[in-house]
Length: 71
Picture 1 (cartoon, rainbow, N blue to C red):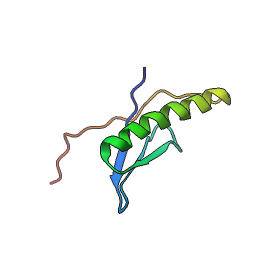
Picture 2: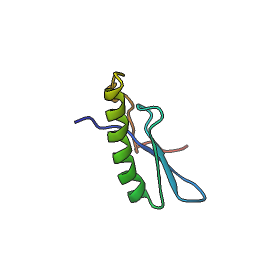
Picture 3: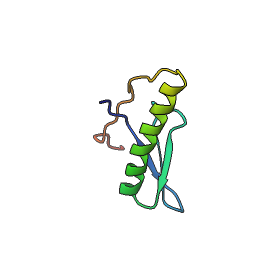
Picture 4: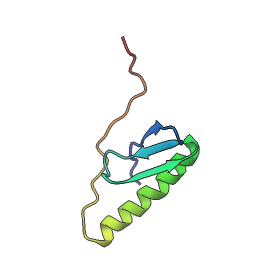
């Protein structure tokens, strides 16, 4: 099982998420947990679509860290 980095941003209406390693794979939700759960389904759906159409499913390459501080 691969683990993909998911970026989540807050908007005026809720939250939006995308995956840098899966262009076009996005999800939205009212809360962060809801958005994460929607993104799980979106990633599965996106990968299934890639496989069905014969496109390659690239392994995750984006790395994330929460250890960075602003100066």
